[in-house]
Image: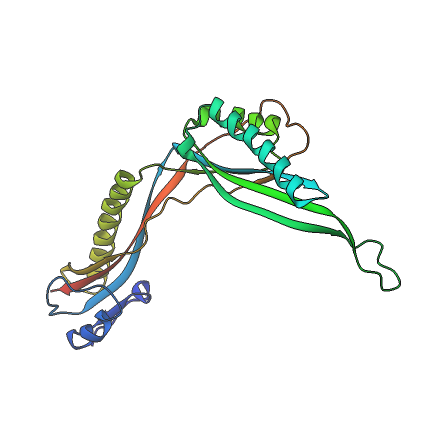
Length: 244
């Protein structure tokens, strides 16, 4: 029976007979285990400057007829798209994310059982825009609002191709896992720890928080957008066999 110090209470040591059942829920073993097995999870991340941003924008229009509301909306949206194209955004980076038309009612003066008063139709059209020139992001926001955008959400920063960053995070995670396994082995009286199983969790580059802004007639001049840095992360579940 192994006597384990408090510092590894969170880790799990198993005899070979227990490995089979555990592996059904964890990583697939790389080699048969002949000693106690240690299970744990490591995470590693790599920071980098983002190279793109996603901004959501749109226009809302109202009219007493549904047809007029949609026609006015289409005209306003054409101006917003034209401003984006003029600002250097590729058409393939502009995507419609939602179109909505709904009746609007006034509920403020409901007395004596009177129904709400119909006040017209509201049409909305939303775009998702990928901005690849981050130094122009603030100018694009101003241009969209000047062209008629009534709402802006963003930016959410990201990495166009995170593959290399994910590989860096993987190498970092593997190194961390081996160092931690060696520490556990030494703390419990074993000579070394051999990797017998590994599985990868989701790798991700989380976007920066999105800030919603409701735009009025014009935007404040010279909108400033700072991209900062973001983390690309990976998670590994590992199993090590402890050897004497």
